[in-house]
Length: 487
Image 1 (cartoon, rainbow, N blue to C red):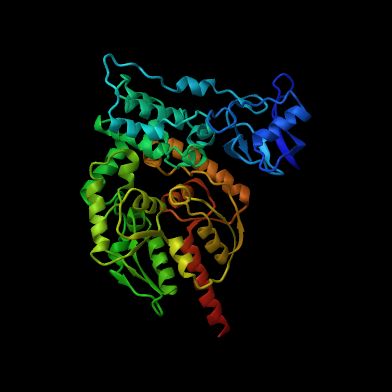
Image 2: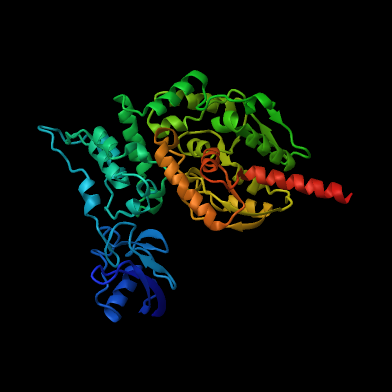
């Protein structure tokens, strides 16, 4: 047995105007779960503590709470000394109990189709990844879109897709999903991150429903414009200045001895909208002895089409990009766009390794830059943090380049999943929340590793926003200037 102290949110609507935190010391066994700690509070301190639980083995979902801000199942999460237990971010009925009825009411039930046959094996396999949901609503509590829109939530859309795949159902699931906010999802994968069953709702439900909507001509007009642009030019953004590919040779040699070699997938934003950042990245690679091969026949990765359900032209884009790198014998492809990197890693079947620029620089090791005299915070791009599992490398590199680093809570900025173009009011609202978080850190600069995040956050805050490679390059230039000044 051991004694732990935990802080628990309490709220009695008959007595309290708002929730408050109370602290308890309880005795629990080694390996005890949060649910056991709550039982200990109820049994030894306050029998009126209200919380839900049923089976206690991670199957029913009723005991979902937030522990230190993260939605979890109380029966699965290990109890830790000093933890804070709060209800899900839903209307609170009492203490840790939240009102689930409004969400449950939106979850579709099967509309039996007369004389429908049982699902075929292929249909059953497609349904399987979606039917494991235990309706704990951790995803609903964590979804950023729900904070600023009338989006029905991830588990509601998951159910619409499950029924759309079931031949026994006669409901119009595509129209239902659109009415419930199908195009509000930024595909940030926060729902997958907190799901106890690891259900990939963006990949298995949101994007698939958007495909079905596209076949019926229901894709948002702005998304259709992007698809036409890719079809006509091979790029998802219009050319507004000389592109990156127009400014560089196919092989960029390092300044000194060659320590390594990578191919570079530039992506549409860095090629046409913010090419200077890509040029900065090449300077950083040259400085660190890495030869960069830049195939000039590469095209859009297809991410904007995949995220919005317009997938007919994606196989052609994949083939062109794979051939562009393989015909040059490239074995490692570097990306500096989180969305491109996640797409190449997760949606392609490539014969080469795909690595983010932060992975490459971390693996090779970098020449230490001079530290910039700034207080910096870091924004995690969703398609880097959750799409590629990259968290530590950018922070380590950033700490090499700035005087002070301060953390900021990770949340989607609103730029992804076609939301910035298709639902701009939602993107703006999520961007405003990023602005609040940035201001709370007192940072002089926001650093990120994604052109969409960089572009969007810059529109939403007056704090300067920079790409990590630009920060490193500025550090190298400062270092060179200091050397020249002391010579």
